Length: 473
Image (cartoon, rainbow, N blue to C red):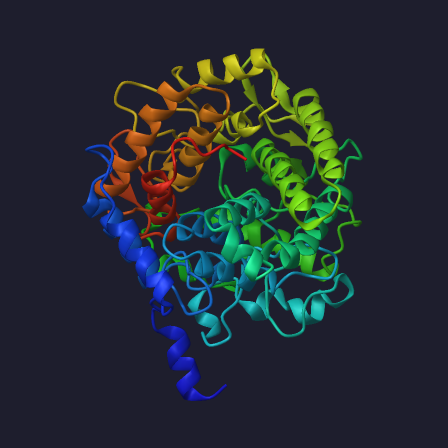
């Protein structure tokens, strides 16, 4: 690649089209509805997204996460639609350029201009174009071999709705629909490991909540890779107290290496195989979004609506736990529910056709002692009273902005607008006070992880700019 082209890709790309320039100015200067949603916050969020834009996509963080991540890009596109619909479209298009022939969307698409040492596991660990050849890994891009939660169809639908004329002019949905349909088909066939109708994850990174205590029991079966066989680049930029332990990382590396050695074949036996409630709730909502997309492009929406209904029934039947008032993950190796209370179990609030008694219990749990006190910031990622709670260590307790945004949206989907308003205001206040932190200590609201984190900024912008009357789907 010519040097002048590489330098252009690395610079933050400001909108060039006059219409996009006008749109950005309108968004940044629009009067704000509440004290929490002030103009400074809006401009700060926009600045993060502009700074983290590479020219083709958005990095979650310039230091800690310097490539393109799958569900990050979906959340980022949801925020970018308020600044530049074209850029939001490109965010999703760049990610889907790394899709495999079997339908999977890998959780990382690597930037070829960066050295391998910028992040671990790097392209030379995953070896996607070689080890993933039989699964249809692309030759033109290096990617990981695992996946992340399927938020992409929801993101595509929201981006389309932000400017339907521009979307139709570029045939945005027409081009994305076959890829999104293939992605969902992969999850509902090759990843239905139990044959029960839910998608399974085969690595703790796949549900997006890497070191959640939910994975402690299934991970205890895994022999960790030796520490001297890999170098953790994340510790170059993140405080060790905020990050997964070396023991956890050794197990992550072992599982990923085994999957790679099997050619990323989902039919082989897996030492780690879990049905996760958040992952499947997002699949349901994205199937409903795909039904809307299908209707726009002349495909059959009924197929996707029926799948969403089937998934909803199966989610309740297999993962709902009445005793805890929460959805629990199911370990497929021993076919038992994992008795850990995680924010993942609250995310099914997003599902519009969830039975009303289940909705009521979920909201009671959300506002109960496991996830709420008078001083709690947002929603902790793990039970405040849990034996493994750690207020600073990644997904073992800290509160995250993407899960709070999903819960806020779920509350609105079920008509709990007053409760949603409180959570919305808390998200905005905490994002501003923490400099758009990756996550926060739920007991103090103090920022943890990296700052100027892209999905925090994007979802802040969405809450500031989205129409309050916008339907959930």
